[in-house]
Length: 310
Image (cartoon, rainbow, N blue to C red; front, side, top):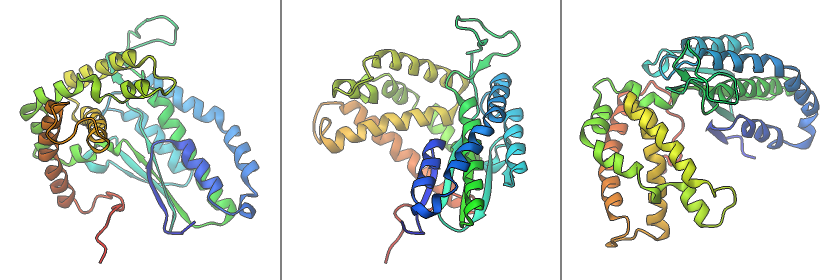
């Protein structure tokens, strides 16, 4: 495997671990049993971290205690932590090592507003908080940190070069660096109706097509869509630009697949409203994204996958 290989912003810490344990020659894997044992030995530590984050139940941009806990854990493991990235106090990037490959792991630990819940099987709100980890970000944050530390230990045990980099809540970087609120204005003032129509359309919802294409496990696509609508409603009520855009781009990707693979073709009436609205939204947002990135060259945007080649 080429040394220039870089994996940036992996959404799954388990995938990051499995890559690093299998992407090297067999003779370099002599510490795999020890690494597995070490992960098992630290299980209680990271379970405790996950439960603490669950108890904090801090919504996006306000995860002060959760962020501090994860930063302290990484610093104690030998990572260098850059806090407050992208002008967001609770976002950070933790790094260890040098050279390639660069293993990037994404960590999130924000709770959802309005879904306070005790640790009980029936619906029962916690009186002290009005938010909760309905989508498991307390596990996501703790698990990603454990994966980063485990890979670091593997590098040291084998005397290998490489960089481990954990990106914590930096998915909102563009929004956070948009000081003039151009993205905010586009989403909430220029295209609120178009976005609402797009997000209410089941035909740009991936589980809908997974079910109709015979993929097992998506029979409950309608329930999944209903749950997604609740998340969307919360994001709209909170005017959470980054969360809403992540859902919008997920839907636009499905629409893109329809265009490329047939189903919403040129000059067709199928999904024409969504194609028109999607093109308008992208035509406005993409230049803004590029402007923000160019205005902030000091920010680590990662390596371009299609760089200029002469």
